[in-house]
Length: 366
Ligand SMILES: [Zn+2]
Image 1 (spheres, helix red, strand yellow):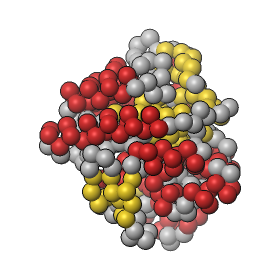
Image 2: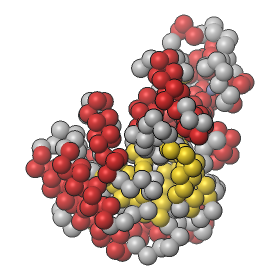
Image 3: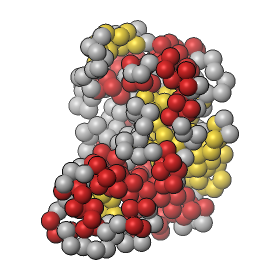
């Protein structure tokens, strides 16, 4: 169930609450990525302390390892990973972009190769439904065909038709009342294909709608144009989820267009490669100039890392490739994005979102 609490008057931004199985996710909100049922280097207790209330895991990856029986033996995905916040499960459609996984795609199904064992797997929308129902995630994502950026119009046309055909099959075979299902709009960077995909998905009446296939190499202005033109086609009373976009500036701009939910591996991956977000922009913490800086990573940040440790300490650990340094940087980055969404939400509720966004973007160098 999705309730909109307040709609901004100067933009399409809105503040809402998504409730599934008594689990609450306030929007705008950010989902840390837990592909293998963990957010890399971070415990569920730390996630909670950071303020995160949802994660997204990956149905295909968990199906391959450890396998559904192992998760079911624990009860469900929440119990398996000891996380009682909302769990979204991604379908595996995004893995079609990864040559380690993809073997071939036909109208009926996609054939994957397990990067773990090399075994071949025919992955249909029906199997994708079964996996996500058995995982017991709160929100299942349909199996979509995610084409790579730069594909021809004809290829994207065929891919979008496949996405719709699979979405219908997914919808028809889904029987779990306690799990919501979100459709995913594809269509590359072609407006008519995105429009057609969005309109056809809306007719199938999903619980929410995602915009997929972005942030995969297209120029930023093209990405923003797609978001701006797609969101008005999605029903205003349903949640809107922009998949895979996790740069602060992109998220704030998307909120202005009416996007509610985000996920991205950027904050965790960047942290493991020394890059952190600060209110003045991205910073490479591994640089020598920080080795005697006794201030925090980001002045004013209330995260565990910034409350307890100096920039010089984190810099030292990262330069020594110490896992604890990567953990501290990850905690800060996740806190930064989760907190940015909370601040955006407060600004929307208080009718000052555009001012908040303008001020943030003025300080944030990217
Ligand atoms: Zn911090």
